[in-house]
Image (cartoon, rainbow, N blue to C red; front, side, top):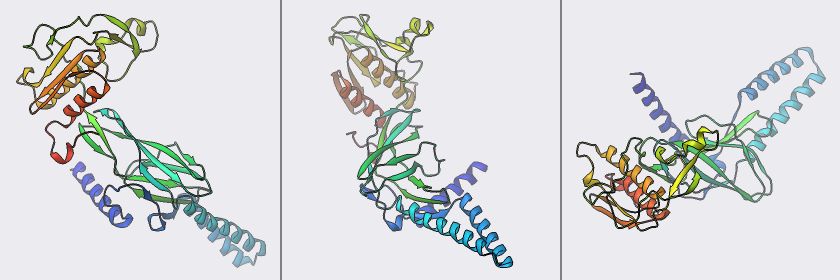
Length: 335
C-alpha cells in the first residue's frame, strides 16, 4: 500500500513538472536554455536572510535608525542583484547528448552530457543530476566560450535500451541566497547487456553437439599474459595468486591463435531454463570466449552471427542478447 501511494505521488509530481517546466519527453539537441526555461527561487538561507531584513526594517522604522535603514537596504540590494547573477549563470547555455558506453545490467550507466557556454563570462558553481534524485557534491565550472562534459550515473536493472531521464541543472552562485535551475531531457540512450551468469559452466570443447562446441584449432590453455581486471571477467580467469599476495587484480589471457571456433547456440541450452537465464549464460560465454581470444559465433532464434573475433563482434553478440525478444520500439539495432 505504501509503495503504491509512493508511485501515485511520483506520477503526480512528474505530470506537474511536465506542465510547469515544459518538459514532455526526450528532446533533440542542442537544447538552449532560454529565459522561459530557467526558474529562480530563494534558498533556505535566502529566506532566513529575507526574514532578518524584515525584522531590521521594522526595528529601523520603530526607532528611526538611519544607519539601520542604510544597512537593511544595502544588504537587500546585494541580495536582489544576486538574483540577476544566478539567472545569468544559466541563461543561453546549450546542452547536447554525449557518449554513453554500453554496460552490463546491474552496473551504473554513465551518460556524458555536453554543455557549451557561448558567452564571454564563466559559468560557475553548476550542478547536474537526474531529476527526482539528490544533488551530488561534484560542482563544476564552464570557461567562457568553452564546453564541458559532465557524466551522469544511472543505475540499471534490466537489459535493453536505457533512456536518459530528465536532468536537473542548478546553480546557487554567487552567494547561495538564490537557486536558479532548469529541467531538460536530451534524447540519449545507453545499451544495457544482460548480466553475465556467475555460475555458468565452462565452454565445451568436445564436439558440435554442445552449446559451446569448438572445432578445428588449438587448445585454449596457452597462457598469453595478464591484463587489468574488469567487472565482467570470469572469476575462473582471475590471477588469484597475485591477489593473495596483495597485488592488484589481474585477469589471465589465453592465446587461441584465432584458429579455434566456438558456436554459442540457444538451442543447446537446458530446456528448463528461462529466457533471462539463457541470455545470462550466453552473455557469460561471449565474455569468456572473447577474453580467451577464441573465434566464436552466436545462434539465437531468428538471429545468427558467424564466428569472428574483436571488440566489434563482441558488441554485436552482446547487443543481440540485450535486445532479444524486446518490442520493436526498444530493440532498434545498436549503432
